[in-house]
Every structure is written in structure tokens, then in C-alpha cells.
Length: 165
Image (cartoon, rainbow, N blue to C red; front, side, top):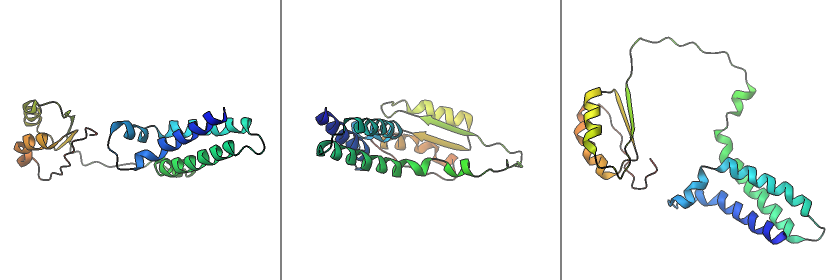
């Protein structure tokens, strides 16, 4: 049981730190999206390890240290995205005055394997949005959408081949 605990602790540590390396394969990056779940599992395993603790058993002690370190690392990554200040500070609702002008946005996840560029181009020409946001675009999509550049005063392109959007 202690060997299982030690292996599980190191597996959870790997699940915590691997997404921080520049490995773009989905099997590694998937752990970046389940950090809260991994943190919860780490907490459960850490609490459970105290029930297995026997005096002088260094294996469990090492597993607990590994779990604690990986939990601290997970919290270091997660906490900037938790709105703690809004829970602590009571704020009055803000009222906004609008100019009455409308803003139209077209957002499209084009899927890199999709090569029917003309469908999106026709849609954009038909709707004539103020802003166009495309995700999961690569160089082929960037080249195909060049015909739309004159319709927008500003554009920012980040063509990626990794299908992460």
C-alpha cells in the first residue's frame, strides 16, 4: 500500500508540473485544464496518507512531502485566477451609460482540418461585423482569410498548427 501511495504521489506531481514545460502534445497539455480536480485528488490522497502513517516509515513521509509540494505548486498556478478580492470586498453595482451604438462580433472556431474557407468568407461578407474572431486557425486559414483584411482596420494573427484555438 505504501508503494502505491508513493507512485500515486509522484504521478500527481507529474500531472501538476508537466503542463508547465513546453510540451505541446495534448496528452500533456490536458493536465493544464484539470488543475482543480488534480488539487482535490492530491488533498484526498494526502489526508488518506495520514491513516497509513507508521513511525519510521520514510516512504509515506516522502509521499506526503511530494504531495504537499505539488499542492503548493497547483495553488500557485490556480490562485491568480480565483476572484478572492471580490469575495472579501463588497462593491456597489456600477451603472453604465451607453452611446446607443451597437457592436457586432462574429466568432468562429473554424477547425483546422476544415478547408471550406469560402463559407466563412461568405458569412463575414454577408453579416459585415465590426469584429471577427477566428480560433483554431493555421497558416492555410490565415492565407484564405486575407481577402477579408480590407474590411477591418486592425488585425492580429496568431496562426498555430497545434489545434488549441
